[in-house]
Image 1 (cartoon, one colour):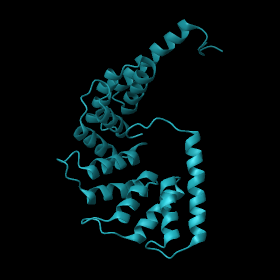
Image 2 (cartoon, one colour):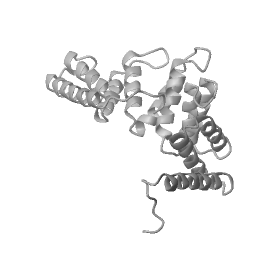
Image 3 (cartoon, helix red, strand yellow):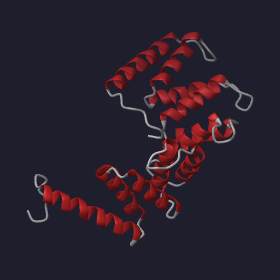
Image 4 (cartoon, helix red, strand yellow):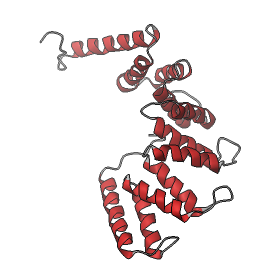
Length: 231
């Protein structure tokens, strides 16, 4: 059929990819389409492996167009020093915050990363802000992001001067993270029921949660992937 690319033909493939780049570049800079800019980033990363240029487009798309997913990805670039950018966690935090505050596919992940960087204090002279971290974890947890629910449960389980220990909330968020597939959360909830730690002792629930944790762990071991910041 006319118009289809024969992917066995190197010249047709090269022409197709070049046209794709031109189209995305036009959409980004001429039509001022933020999604077109993000497609250009996909091309630069996936096809050309030109991460320096991808970083420049991300910076433009985040700062000028406030494109949520571009801000999120730019945050990951700053966090890891990718694309020729100097590693800078404060800049990463600012990007994640922008992505969190504006709807996008990675907004929930961005809110979680804001929580992480706020909790460990690396962006504020090693002065953690646990209340702010909790609030951003809660936003991500409300969006069903399991790691944020787990971090919330840990905060309430451990307690601190600014976040009092609360076993009811610790269990609540452990169970939600478990339901969302976080095996450590299942293990923690199992332990709480097994020991009667802040909750009524219940061996049946403890055993069910332990089995769930073991199942999730086996599934995770089968599909282990390298961990990347913010992914």
